[in-house]
Length: 305
Ligand code: FDA
Image (tube, rainbow, N blue to C red; front, side):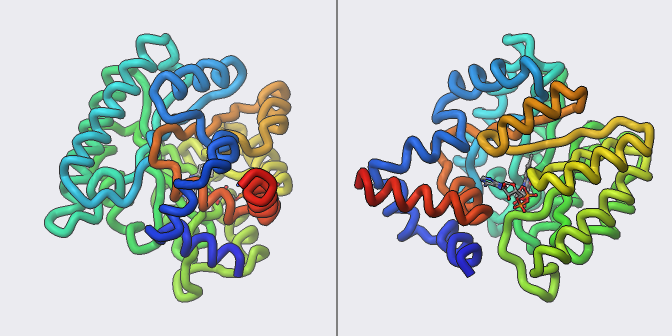
């Protein structure tokens, strides 16, 4: 119920205006977001890359005009050039969201997003690093997977994301587990109807494990994105049993000590590191994931507001 309310609020312009206008939000956002500028992102990536791998996300989603798409492509070009200049290419890649690259524009949105994502991939190739395409709500899954397939024709290292909460995902894992593929498996951060998604946590977890079994038995690189200690343990067990490389991924600001401990234990750990001014949707999804975050947020509002 709380999750559904917060996820609805993540798409409400009215709530967005109130939250963004609040003086007390900045320090709480700072737990999950590196900062507003490129310098903030590069500094945080450099720090994290000492013991972990990183994927940097330039925040933004649901873009409604062509000029914003061009601005986001330019931001990724600048980011990738800085990653290369800083000598971080071997440890730092980028994540992109197709809704920030025009996927939902009325005329030819998928083609616009494919072209824009292609430009980001070309810049990543020049910087000698890789790109992973985030997954958004279920209405975009087919289109996003079609774009990933098209990008992989030229850049076979492009990573895809699959969400265990969707009923289709076990089959998608089978399709995508081929040689050279990179698949990030997560639970899914969007509020989806029961017609397409498991709604009970136990069912999502069971689906996650089934998908993990498919990916770790496949020929690609499974990238296991979860903070759930039980699923991390299962991923480590299945990954070790497969005898093939795999990656554990967590979000910036979430279970940082566990990230460090796993890296120190020899696991390949990657941190998803967002930066930029468009933090609202991302931040609200992080609040929705954990009731304690909301309590912390409300306490801060009451004590300082
Ligand atoms: P779960 O939500 O059950 O959390 C398990 C435990 O982790 C909690 O009990 C708590 O201790 C901790 N935790 C989890 N979230 C927290 C938070 N926000 N704050 C504090 N503690 C928290 N989703 C998507 O739809 N598309 C995508 O492309 C991606 N990409 C992505 C990349 C990476 C690297 C990660 C880690 C996650 C994503 N996600 C995502 C988000 C994902 O779908 C999911 O919403 C979150 O990871 C939370 O689910 P968990 O698997 O962590 O389990």
